[in-house]
Image (cartoon, rainbow, N blue to C red; front, side, top):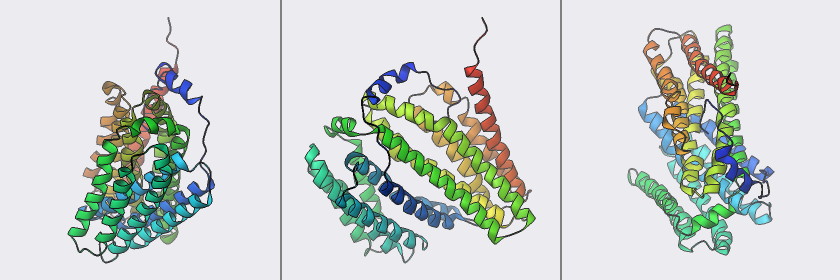
Amino acid sequence: MATAEEPNGGADAAGAESESTARTPRRANWLELFFDLVMVAFVGQLALGVHGDPHPLQFLTFAVLFFPAWWAWVNVMLTLNLFGERVTGKIWLMVSVAMFAVGMMAAASIGGLGDRAWAYALGNAILRLMLFFAWWTQGRRNGVAWYRPVLYCGVTAVLWAVSAVVPPPGRYLLWAIAIGIEVVLLAFLGRESSWLRQALNIDHVTERVGLFVVIVFGESVLAVFAEWSASWSVASGLTALLAFAAIALLAWAFFTYSADSAERSWRRLHAAGNIGALRDTVMYLPFLLVSSIVLLAAGLGTAVADPLEPISPGAAAAVSGGIALFYGTNALIALRYRERLRDVLRWAPVGVLLPLALLVLTPFVTATGYVAGAVAAVGLMAARAEWHRRRALTPVAR
C-alpha cells in the first residue's frame, strides 16, 4: 500500500506473478461485502467521538475502541479467505452472528469507555467465539495445532467476556492481554507458516483490503456532505467542496500508487514465503491507514459545520494528523515491502511534515482556510508523485 512515486519493475515480481497465475483467482462474495458495510457503519459511529474539538484522551479512546474492531475484521477476512470460498449454511451463520456482534460494538462505542463498555467487550467475545468455531473445525483439518484456536480464539473470548464484569482499569488490562495473546501467537507461526503460504489467496486479500478502504473513503465523503446538509449555507458548501477535494486527492493517491504497489508486493512476499511481512502489511499497518482516513474525515466534517469560525485545535489536529499519518503509514508499509530507504525518503518526510506545519495556522485562519491549506498539501503531494511517475515512464534520450 505504499504511495510510491515510481512504478516497480517487473523483474522483482516475476516469480510472484508466475506462482500467482497457477492459483485460481478468488473474488469477494456477497456475504463478505455485507460484513464490510456493517463494519464501516461501526467506523462511522466511532468517528463521532473525534468530532468537534477532541482532546488527546478522545483520540486515545478512538484508538482503543477501533483497534479491537479492526483486529476482528481482519481476522474474519483472513478466516473467510482460508475457509469461506463457498457460502455454506455454517459460514452464513458464523458471519451473521459476527455482524450482530459488530453492531453491538457500534451501539456501545457511542459511550466511549463509559457505562456501555461491557457491551463492547461482549461483542468482542462473540466475535472470538465465531472465529474459534471456524478454526477448530476447519483449521484442525488442515493441520493447525489444537492449542492455536484454543488460545487465539477461545481464551481471548473468555478474557473479553470476563472483562465485561470487571471494573476499570482491570477491564482494559484484560483487553490488552487478550490482544497481546493474539499478537504473540502471530509472531510465532511455526509449522503453520508453510500451510498459510499454500492456502492464502492473495487475489482475495488484495480485493478485500482495497474494497474496505474504498468503503471507508465513501463513508468519509458521506460524513462531509451530511455536515453540509445540517449546516446549509454557501460557506459550508464551499468548505464541503474543499473537504471533498482533499478526500478525493488522497483516494486518488491511494488507488493510483498504493493499491498497485500492494498487489505487486504481496505477490512477491507470498512467493518468497515472507509471511511476517505479509502479516504486518495486511493486518497491522492498514489499521493506521484506515484510522488516518477516519480522523481526516472527522476534522473536515467539523470544519464544514462551522466554516467561518476559527478551526478548533482538535479538528486541526485531526485534519493534519490524519494526512501525516496517511503518508507516514505508507512509508512504513513501503519499507516493509523492502523498498529502498532513499526512494521512500524522497516523498515521506514531505508528506508527514507538510500537513503538520499547517498547525501553526490554527489561531489565525477560519475552518475554511485551514481546509484549503490541507487541500494544497495533499494536492502538492499528488502533483509531485504524478510528476515522478511520468518522468519514470519517459524514455531516456540517447
